Image (cartoon, rainbow, N blue to C red; front, side):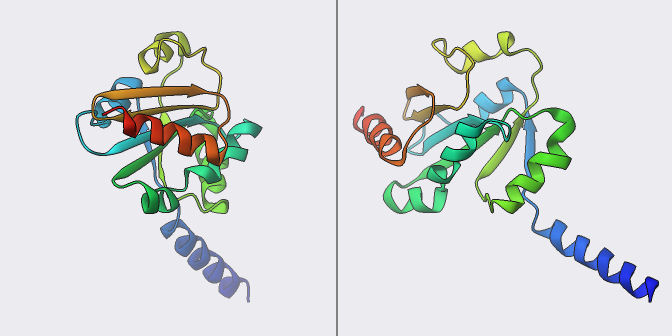
Length: 161
């Protein structure tokens, strides 16, 4: 009986791990290099953490399937600033529970003073924060976004060309 229970438990954990969200580990230079600013793709890069209530509240507006219907081509990148020790214990379970399917990057940087200005010189480092890139144009928003405000920001950057 105990053996059967452990076999079922093992198989269940294996199946669940197949559906676990991948988290790519990048430093700030690698993150910036991954954004092709000369392409026709709109990149929406959101900086957030699971411990940040406003960040978690705004996550649903970054649903790339919904955004792709209105704006093509678009790539959403969710950059987690969670603690390294909590990637497996908190971040990945959170992504699975919330059914987050967008690309998730964990930023492997220890000192914000060394990378925040690379993202945007006007950024204080507070989250949530969102940076958009489109055809050599950039726009930045510090603070929580609503669905309407995100659409407004997207339409603004698309109109810059």
